[in-house]
Length: 76
Image (cartoon, rainbow, N blue to C red):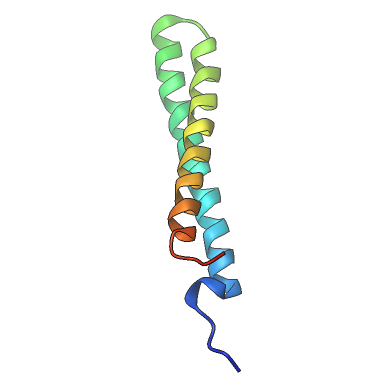
């Protein structure tokens, strides 16, 4: 029986998916909060939508960076 590397364990994959969800959710909430604040200042609802979409984009970008960091040391 071969010894499994840390990155090959199923629990590692589950934890990584949890990190992705948390990261994206945090950035969406932050985007909503900033967009809501700017919307209240300007009176336009477009800032709210823009904040949420910006938060989503940043969350996805940070998840991609985590994947690249994890795959950095793998063979495949």
